[in-house]
Amino acid sequence: MLNVLRQPLAFSRRFSVSLSRSCFVSCSRSSSSHTKSPKHALKLQPEQQRISSFFPLDSKNTFATDFPLSEGNLSNIVLYDGDKVRSHLSTGPQTSTNEAYNDLASEWIRVLDSGPGVLVVKNAFEDHDLLDEVTEAFDVIIEEEEAAQEGSGDHFSAAGNNSRIWNAQEKLCVNNPGLFVRYMNNPILTSVSRSWLGPDFQVTSQVNSSHPGSAAQDPHCDYHLGFRSNEQVVEYPAHVHKMSQYLTLQGAIAHVDMPLESGPTTFLPYSQNFERNYLTWRDPEFIEYYKMRNCQLPLDKGDAVFFNPGLIHAAGDNLSENVDRLANLVQVSSAFGQPMETLDRYRMCKAAYPKMLELVNSEGHGDPAYILAAIECCALGNAFPTNLDKDTPQGSSPPPSMKDKVWEALMMKITPYEFGQWMDAHKELRETV
Image 1 (tube, rainbow, N blue to C red):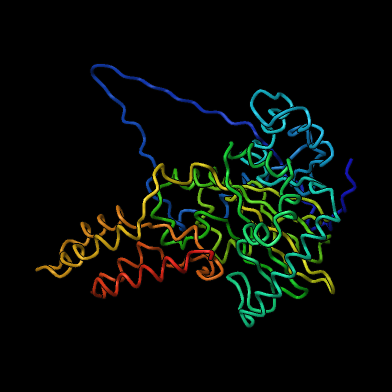
Image 2 (image 1 turned 45 degrees about the horizontal axis):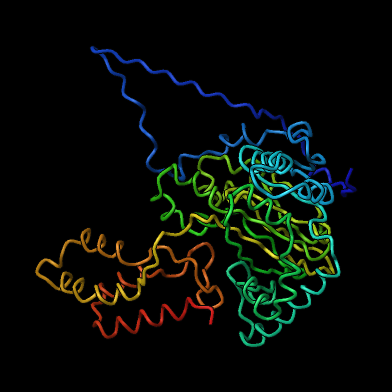
C-alpha cells in the first residue's frame, strides 16, 4: 500500500455511496392515443439549483472495491501506484487490443465520469532529477517574463502571489527540446489522456508557482464552460453542459512536495455530476458550502493528479513558510475540438465587413439577427485558443473573440480600412511569435 499522509479530521469525512444507476423507458403507442415525450431542458438557470440538491451526490463514499486496480482512496480521491500502472502499461500498446490497458482505462473512465471525478497517480514521474531540471528551466522562463512584464499578475491572483507561465508546453519545447522530450516521454500522462479522450488528443500546459502567503482560489470549474460568465453559460443548452466535460481532461504534475499547509488543490468529489455545476460555483452560499465540504490531500514530488473539468475545485491557501507550490497544470483536449477544414477567418471577415457595414448603415439599420447570423458564419465566436501571455482572461471571463471585435466594429461603424487594422492587431495578439 502507498505511504500517504493522513489528513486532519476536517479532510477525512466519510460519505455513503451508491454507484448504481437504473433507467426505465416505457413507450406506448396506439392509433387512438399518443403520449408526448418529455421536453429536454433547453437552458439551465442558476436559481434552479439549491444547496440541498447537492446532498445525494455529496453524501457518496468511495470504497476500494469500486476501483480494484487502485490503492484505495483518501477523502474520496482515488489513488494509484505509479509503478503498478507502469507495469500494466508495459504489457503492450495503449489500444483496444490490449486487455491490461483496457481494464485500467475502463476503471479510470469510471473514476472520472460517474465516480469521484479525480484520481492521483503516485510517483507518475519517477525521475525526480529530471523534474528538478525541468523546474530549473521553468524558473528561468519565469524570471525572464516577470522582468519583462514588470510585476503584472495573472487572472488567478495579483502580482507577487503567484508566478505563472502561459503556454509552458511550447516554451519548454522551443527553449530546450531535449529536456522537453525526456519530460513528456511519460506513458502514464498519455494513457490517462487516451482513456478519457481517445487517441489524437492535444496537450497544452501552464505552470503555476504559488508562493507562501498566497490566498486560495474561489471554487470553480474549468475550460470550456468554466471560462464563461453565468450570462454566457445559460445560453448553452443543458446537454452541452454535460458534453463539455468529455472534451477536456485537467491534470497537474507536482514538481515539489506539497504538504497540506502549502495548499494543494481542494476538490468536491462527484460534483461533476451536479446538473448545474457550471452555474453554481459563483453563488456565495455555495462558496461557503464548498469551504465546509471540500476534500484535499498532500502530494509528493512526481505525483500526477487528473480530474474531470466539470469537477468543482480550487487551489488552497499556501500557509507554509517556505514552499513554493509549483505544478505544471496540464490541459488535454479532444481531437474533435476543431473543424474539418482550415479557414482563414480573418481574411473572410475583412472581405465581408464592408457588406455588413452597408446593412448597418441602411435604412432601418438592418435586422440585427440577420447581421449576427452573418458574423457567426464568418468569425470565430470562441476566444480560445489564444496567446494567454498577451490575450489574458480576466477572472473567468474570456478575452474578446473575433466575433466580439466584428460586432463592436459594426456598432462603432468604423471604416473597412480601420477594421482591417483591428483584425491584424487581434490576429497578432493571439499568435505565439
